[in-house]
Image (cartoon, rainbow, N blue to C red; front, side):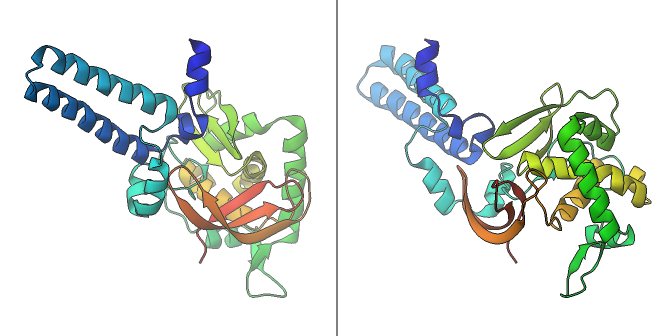
Length: 280
């Protein structure tokens, strides 16, 4: 039985990858099929079969949606084509929303922060010498690279995440799904989602540096800290995983629910994704 369930299950459309708009649409279709079965059997005077068979239809639809993610083949393509971004966002399908505090993290503390101004005031960013943009300051970049190397080699990422959250009793768990990297509490509540483990390492390595430089760090909510870390990551020039050069390019990203363009900062060597945002 387990083998049968395993063959029927489609992990690309279930679990964390489940497309909730697809699920809602398909449950509505399943309910409509069950109702049509009920009405049809009542119309031919098959009262004894009407309710049991309609319930069987509904149950089979629910099982199919649970195991496969959808009932009607092609539903993911329909949501990509016809569901507007605001509707997908209602189901938590904002594909560019990544970093610390994207879901269940506490919002206690100051939740509004101007990342660019705050990072400049902290001495992490400064105007570039050759272009009209911001760049990492030399001393911050050097300190960040040392912190990344330490985090990558000595396995302190769990302790550093606890420190960012100011939660000494938290026992976070980590897992990777596709290219994405997730952190959750022991109870399963999501702490954050990153484009890759390399992006996560960059954040937890930068956090103690910002804690020493941002005057209001202790007053910031977890989400505000996450926005600072996410914004800072955009200015990386070297991959935290393999120390190769990073490249910014516009790419098309597909999920179960949507297809959209993103401006992505990625490693040319190992392929790690460090940052995504809607292109300007």
